[in-house]
Image (cartoon, rainbow, N blue to C red):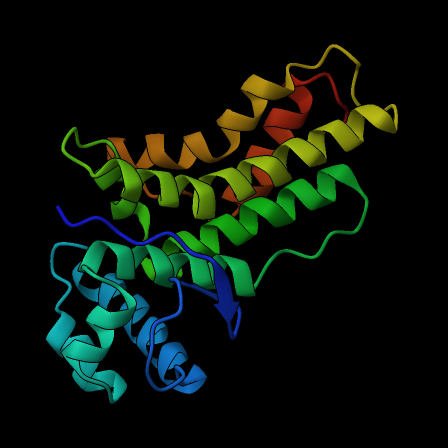
Length: 207
């Protein structure tokens, strides 16, 4: 599996690899490519992604895509991360409300980009370590940090007990979605609200 490049900056909010000689990248083309990739992910999954088809629909070329993203897995991660990073949940300062918003955002990213398949790829033993690292840095770590922040804010405000097991609880919230997926169960429409309340009560909160 090809190694993906680390990022050193952003253009149009999209992390990019180290600069190379040549014409500056076109923000509109990048946006079109990432949006097209998300549609193809939703329709065909990771294994069904076609660089040629994405390039054609986005009005670009395969060569242009490969200059930006060396393989379809790195393109898939970039597309999903772009959606997560450009539409973050609004923080209100109310811990439980913010936790619900975080899970609603998670659900939107999973459904809109059909990114659940990427989590499955992560579990494969032959996944390139660099690909796994970037996936965790751009998708897993930010989400986990925001969930932990919601719970810690609850503790700070006295809404959760000081001994609430935040480290474990923060893994439960998104873990329930994956568990349903493995079992072939469709998450209910009110999944975000029910899951947030369940975890909140498990941590000793009320409401």
